Length: 379
Image 1 (spheres, rainbow, N blue to C red):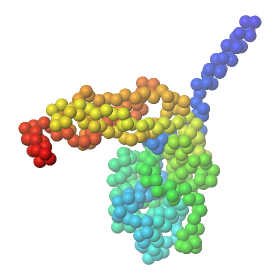
Image 2 (image 1 turned 135 degrees about the vertical axis):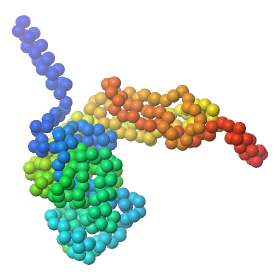
Image 3 (image 1 turned 90 degrees about the vertical axis):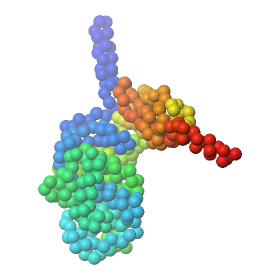
Image 4 (image 1 turned 30 degrees about the horizontal axis):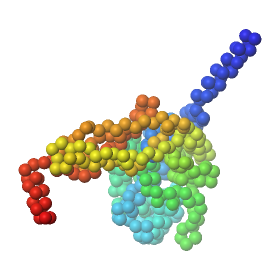
């Protein structure tokens, strides 16, 4: 009988031990690639990493930054999808993967983006760079400026297409940062989800280099890269049930291992995390203003946001509004007056600025007289 109780206790212990193991665990040893990262695209939170700041070449994943600057040029009106781009001798001279542009050949911006995103065309990437900045050199300078602005401290770009070049380096973390920036331009998904298409009125067929488009549920992109120095690389983006993930693999030995590692990262993310959408500024009461021409100021915050947390723990999120009892005039529209904080297990997981929605002038003799005059005119 005593042995029976021992066995039962042992089985209970095993059950409790198994119960606390995540639905899907992942270790760095399970990934063949030397460097990897999994990022939540909504918040930028790192969910898994392996040597994520190790500086390495990234081959054609470089084009993520190229496409980011192109999409910014389109958003600003500097470039338009139906603009015609003429290939220079320099663009036509690119080797590696390309669409065999000839000097003087013309294509629309739309087709050049398609060639760059789908077929990873080095010549099309350079043609786009020249269309935006006038020369590849000036465009690369803009790439490095953008990288600095995004906090990509491991990155130096030497060209716009990722061909091997001394000093052209980045890291898995930085690739995730620029991938997150690119997908803010949702139009890019129109290209990165294309499997098969054509250019030159059907004369040139292009096939996407991202084979996960044919095998992974929820995949939305983003870019592959392969060179002798970089090995096989990928930045893979996917979405399921509001959870948006970026999986970066650098330096895999083969394309097959690159796709397998990226799928393993994404599987881990979808198995262990969930995204919860929050409504933020709906219940913000006006804040009292001391010495102002009006007694209070309306407040604003982001309309909504996504928080990514371990699966099953979203109900444990607590919200705290950090605001003073009042604020002194003058108040300018957009002034940060406090924060809306979210915590899980006593750890802050997100914070959002609470801002003044309007300006409040300081009470003075002149401001009071102005108010009285305005009132008199209206009467």
